[in-house]
Image: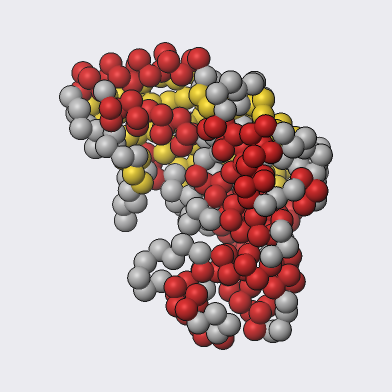
Length: 365
């Protein structure tokens, strides 16, 4: 099945998973999705065993969590024995570094993992953690561009020169969830309005007229019927509903939910994006708000409008760079209605933000 993700008039990305390739960049390697003969040969060379096995996991049309779950199940181990540097897109082909404690190459080789490929084996004394990641290399195919081939090439090359001056480092849409309301849930959690948080999580922004979320919103409190209607794939929602049906409080089910901290960080990200959008003179770094953030200027205005005080946060604030510069931006291929590009972004920056800028160029010139 093809999945189309719109970019507006400029074109479409992710018509196929192969149209969006993400490869992690570490200090000593790029986690390529291709498996060359040289790499295959190197993987057969015996290696001195240590505490952790490191390898590159290549997945297609799967979330990182789902792929790790498949791997753990095949090995019959807890997924907590596996670690990685970051989450990767689902509708994509991605390569990322994984580590497993007390596991050997032979154990991995004999597994049937379906479409998941494991390669690039090495033994190390420590595990993979987020600090290992330098950035991600993206190879993106944009389809359906309503311009002649020559104009596409000229516009994209000109765009590549312009972004060397920097791109505003917005958090991408993924940060706010598939229904774009994670930050609203986070706002309610910070205010300790837990029923509102649960209701927004379970019913906010239903995707269609017959969506079970809409049904639950109209019959709030019908936990048993909600459980019957929510598909089994929505494990988090079903976990919350099960807790409510068992008599737990709104506070309890929200605090127990694994993604509750992510919701708060999503609100933090929304404040950052609003600051970037509203400021005329933008410094090199802007605050990611926490309980020690100085409330003044634009950040103070946003928090006041949202009814949030810094002391509501249970963690200290930090900073984030206001701009990023893509490295190695190049045009790989241009055909009628199609363009394929490659670039590398530092960790924490979003390709969707850069592609949105490119779409604006392709749409309005």
